[in-house]
Image (cartoon, rainbow, N blue to C red; front, side, top):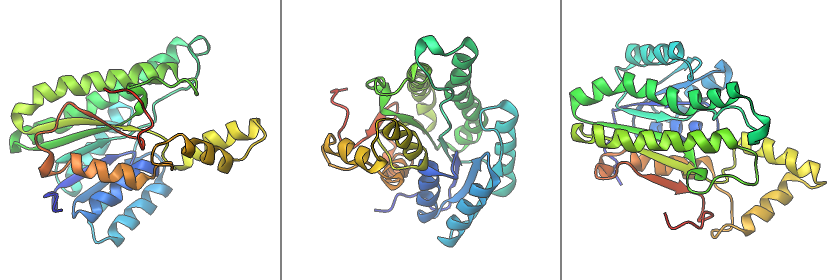
Length: 264
């Protein structure tokens, strides 16, 4: 299937590891010019080299993608390399973790900053170009907790502000739709990333179990009987950012192997 995005500039925020790296490489395969933004230079360089190995033009930029200055740095780097981005993938750490009674006001504010405000800053920076050309794709990598808040993990602030980001996406979809710009969200389930392995290895070890035991137990509860991969997420991201998805906006697509039982 030709997704019609060859030659477009794709900015992948948090694009050096895990799901973000999967997206960076998927857009590289589709012939996009890829800008990979993250904090740590080492993983950025690795991801850029992998993208170039697929025949794509790619650059990396090290920045705090949850600050206004970092957003400006990323956008300036993208414009200098390839021009303003046509596609923006917003994928950042969701902020401090913890149960409601254990997290501070500042930690709640940090979660709002990462999930909602940083997203808003990137959209404001990217939209003028998209409006001018009458085409754009904005996609947030979120979580299936927007459908059913996490209970197995203490994620009070994330449960709150991931939904805030989703509400902003829905609002933006109506405002930007007349200009040919779509705004959607991908909700992750259990995806085999380094971060997921670190979190659940620790939980499993506290229970005297191995990470492999946890994977087997979790897989048995998922209709497709496995946990996901970054490539699963990236494939969905590429479609939602393609020319073939122009009538899909304001939506959240949960990629979790059928784990969430909610109808909507």
